[in-house]
Image (cartoon, rainbow, N blue to C red):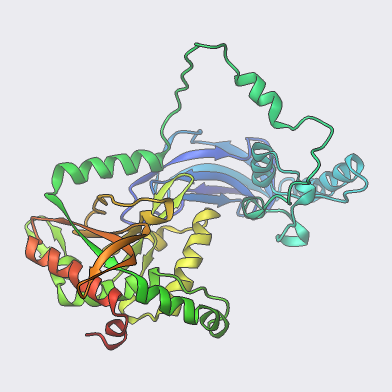
Length: 405
């Protein structure tokens, strides 16, 4: 029986994708739930798996080709080589056992083997979480190298031949041209669109972090114990302060749709997360109804999923306001760029001790610059400044967050 392999159903915010990598070729045997192909969209990489045991009969879309939602990309003949497909894992395990008797059997998906080869990871050191101990792509992504021994190995490091291969003579000018990924290309298009279609301005302020830092220092250990290992950071306070400020200034939480203004009666706050492939913005839905512990645990979960490439399109769809923290990379001051169709974005920065005047005295305080970029077509300067001041006041006096005043 021939089964059509279709691209996943894309949400409205994703128009199309590209075939990134075929892990199987026509004529190859496949096992049910085995990874066939990666499809890269402008937000995430989607994995398409085999619906049944069989043989990959035909591929209609090659690597780099554009695919639409639910478009047929291949065909699988189910059951035709059931015995062969069942024997394949056993053969692979036997081969692995022969190659490395001390290491035992190593069963891994093709995607895991390919990624391990690219990163130079020995699969014998990776613990598989799949069926029967099978090593998945996610296992390889999440694997961490053991500590480096104090005495270097006698054999040359694997990276040395690569270094020698790319070594060039003094004065030689080398260039390398690679195509943009779909995600990077989409990011570039959206950023250019923002500069061309919005009247973006930025207002700045600074916030004294000493009370928040003292609160965190006093209760972080208790917080972690009570909330099942969730760490107390600063983002939870800023999200709570932002949601309260968004209620007071609904224009900052609104968006523009043609000639209409759409006011949102909820606060869905996006938190920018940096990944190897680019910046992604998973969304805390109904953030106004979340406690600080839930905010912190959800952000930690998003961070882990982003590092492992497991964020879904649903995780990043929507959002009425965004917070980005360049301070984790050492940024002292920057101008964040809008995340359309949102009309405002808050930028956090590095905490740095500076002398400030307080009650007529010069004291040293841990200070952070805040930046609010906003679309002046909808938000007036007065509203933007008052919104940012509201966040400043709540952070400087955390009791106001609890009391919502």
